[in-house]
Image (cartoon, rainbow, N blue to C red):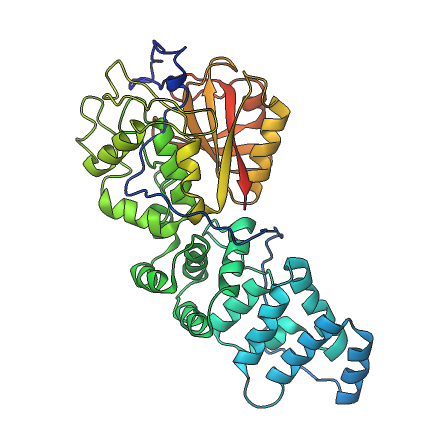
Length: 438
């Protein structure tokens, strides 16, 4: 796939008919293949901002009332409610019993876990959330809320999909790991900081890795988080940029992984101190040599994705001619162990997906917090340039463009009306990397 020229003048597509030119991936610094997570179905649930009024007092129901209500409730949920009530009743709290009940409830699915709160209210006459807040410390409460499918609003970009992955990761923890993890949550100094620990857990990192990460981010503010734990949409509007003429696809892989994995994003910034600086048109290694080397390696790697085996691309300077791109789905899917997502390339020009279907796939992905790479050109059969849809608000889409390294907004009308206008003038949506969450 060809890419655009450095001065925002559109590059002539001399290899337009070569299948290798369809989709230039930008290289991924320190981006290693991860093993795919086969932990089972991941369901989604709406984000909930939870707040309990201070000074709430509770009056517990007599034991006889509780038992009669238990007899009328479904066995599993009733037993869990009874266990929770007994664990928190009176002086002191049996945290192990609380977690045991929550883990058993969460092991069903999010809907069943949510049912616990309603059943607890009916059986005990108390609000489960209030009782948990009264009896658990900050870290324990944060873990309890994610078990139950609740999460405060935050700047961590922790969507429904990653919240559910974090919940499954907690269900797989040993008692020692859970104790260590809740201890880390208790030490956080802001809600955003806490949420990035959850996000790191969702990305498959161990508690030991998250402990190191927690020390690196402790005490920082939301602007620092945005500038260091993401590789797109910094506070200056800039982000990761392709260092080579045809490495937009590899850069998109990096951007996708960086949005899903804050530990990876932070390491990318550490390894490339000038990550958000404009690339050099004449010398790809002048600004971010580590990034450039890794992008070149991945760009020139043979393609082994869903469109059949092909030769890799050719890396040349941004201001030079002769570069060749490649599709990116194979490299995107090599990150599935960390992201929990696999992608399938669907081309509008080949009749593999309609425009309406493409928009539905984009919306379904970003609404769950999953970035969606797309390819644009000057017709539906021109696969010229990779960009990535990060999120949307109604009909407005945040898109990161690897050519200029900027995050911009485009509307639904821009997409349907072929007026996307990125990377020097590519306007038409021609392919979508359709996400499939595991």
